[in-house]
Length: 205
Length: 412
Image (spheres, rainbow over the protein chains, first blue to last red):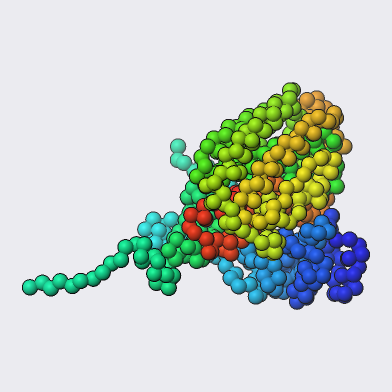
């Protein structure tokens, strides 16, 4: 977004604040004003392509979840990032953009599926990548990389076989690191603790 | 004594001519996929049929979901490169490049000209290989098997080139943050030119086989037409968007890798139907060949990685084995990952299937805090529930073929 457009936008919507960004212009917008802002972006500023919808989980912070939207103008060839903090840390809520952009439909379903953000006004807010009865939101920071034991999506198969979805065996990798802390604490290592040099080998011989 | 009762059964033709009112109301559910040749991977469609007209279509995704974004949050930037191969696995090189460029944008790192040229070659050759497959398989979907044989032969030659360059045919894992894994092999550019020379006559053959083919045109012209407005509303990108008449090519409009210095045209369609989508891909291959030739012609000398990026690009093996400083540098990059400053960045590249975007949130250090991957196929497929209803069941095959999607980047 050009600087003149940005100034115009901020003048019209006083609640917008600038957001730190390493590239494209970015704005913070309160969740209840999001629809108003986005309809102006689409109709008056030429941001006709909703490129991406996603969210960030800030873990311990509050507000915990931030919704992120990327817009692209096919006439001006400029990107714009809009960020909006979600109401509620346990059951985060954002307004749905499906009324403005049809593209929002699947993106919001995906964000709901993986991050657990409820989009109010979405016509069919169901899981899209995980199966319908899946109980967790895997992209949340408190969800472990290996996964959590879960019943199979098909009850009848589970009943006969007694099989469930098991956490991934992480022995031998992937050698994972974490984004925070000094190296002494985050040195990449296999996180599986079922067997190591200090413990006995699982098989008897 | 048994009584006989006379009933009349009309033949199929007369029943069909009795009109729609008679037939409608009797719908049938049809499940296609997740494992079906039409769906090019593991897409599943739940369709409601009235006769052979599709009334409702519900795509079901997620059969190839591997949690790439979750995995990205727990490994260093370089460790994630192999995972990008498996997004659009028909053009792994361009995924590698897009990912590396997103991270470099966050690190505010410029790679040398030679590295840019290598990456540009990778992108364009990957585009050619992806479109060769796209056109070939599309022809096969519409019943024209011969095209597939021609294009696959050419794609095979490309894969030999990729193998020479990266060491692998499919899972290339070629870029590193701040450069590429290794320089181009001796004489490779010559072989690229040789390939370009060979592929053009094949394109002419494909053109003769498909473009004016009566059957192919009957099956594609006017089928699966997407309007300009719909295409924008659903966030469709790439050749599928341009087929609808929207002039958006990130190589021209948001140039990266020095695309602004190359002379090439962007084909734009008019009707947005299946036929136009074929024309787009066929022409894009020719344009890519043009770019490749220009690139080889003025291939710059220099380094294939950013030499000043000491905390990002691991030093040469020979130096690691002989010099203490480089040994430490190598150790730090391997264990802690390339040091990338904190910030938020979004970068997308014009990939064969559309705009592949990476949104990276970093808190500093060698591991991203959050990474969102925008797969173009995901957005391109979201229009299916609007596009398919009203078409015949046989058209579904052609529509899916024309959209040229890949489930690896759709499900991630």
